[in-house]
Length: 466
Image 1 (cartoon, helix red, strand yellow):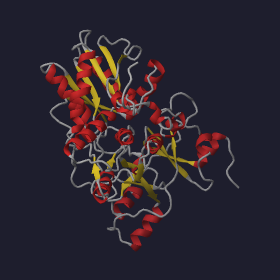
Image 2 (image 1 turned 45 degrees about the vertical axis):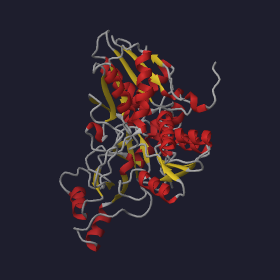
Image 3 (image 1 turned 30 degrees about the vertical axis):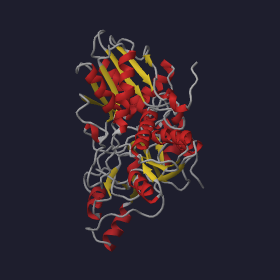
């Protein structure tokens, strides 16, 4: 083994591993690049180190300064590792929906972590990027890494990731597949591979179905560190400058369920414990490879480790509660025929519109509450945008007091509990209050219907509370 001056010398030179069982029946060769073997555990080590070094060279980052960044986790970890090795203070702003393992890792490196609500409009001052920019501006010697618009992000992959893939495949690569988050990885790596091959290598983006990159509605998705979320109140949808739109030849839109189940298969059939964005990229690569012959070589980049997500994608409890693991038992909610139709209004609907939905001829069960969401009322609605609910009685009261033209308002108190289609009635009941009349039911992290608690008790053989 070589001796190294610093842990930063270990960034890059990650291996390619051929897929075997997952690629069974596929004529093309499929490799995955294991970026979780970077010392900080993800592909973002490359961009983090490159951005810091570029800022040092330009004088934007001076000794004793403070690094500030807004991130879903991995870039923050990469920057925290660099900060620890080089002696910088670092403040990392992360959405409160970030996996707890990532937050704990940031703190272990000595980073100051600032949690902010996820899923906010870009113009909201609490938005992760706006808050990070403000902290950097108000901190003496503060430097905002700004991975989304920093040219050193894609440049890191032009100088390292692309050349590594070209060398390790001996120039045989024909298709490169990567997720699109900030866009730096796919833009830099893809640019190099296209240039060195004379345009022969095709570059394919992997993207969640609802991400706007692939033409989705921008609603939330469950795969972290990928895609582009668009809040319905965002006025100007600004895409990262690190994402070069002319590099990908096409984009494969992958549903959360396919990504997460591919994560499970990679662990159990290939021995590769990876995160959700790695499942996304692998699912897209397998889709591409199925249509190719033996003369083709597909390489998918796997951004990070599954150890970052033991409480999420690799947790059977989380998977059942979100409705991803619902076909391995016969007595789960998804197979019990219990779900009632749910009617969804948005917080931009008027009271009159919500009442029409509740009491109109299209409502088969007008006694059920109207669920309030932050976006288009058509199903399926992301769990992240479920805000609350109103009964017909509450809507009629609002019509009298506020008028039917008033915008609906959220009621006080917490929203009803959610249960997953992968849970049994008995499991779901352990989290429901005795006074609850119903619960929201999720499948693939999205609203699938509502279920009466009385039905759950009957199915579980439990008596009604006294």
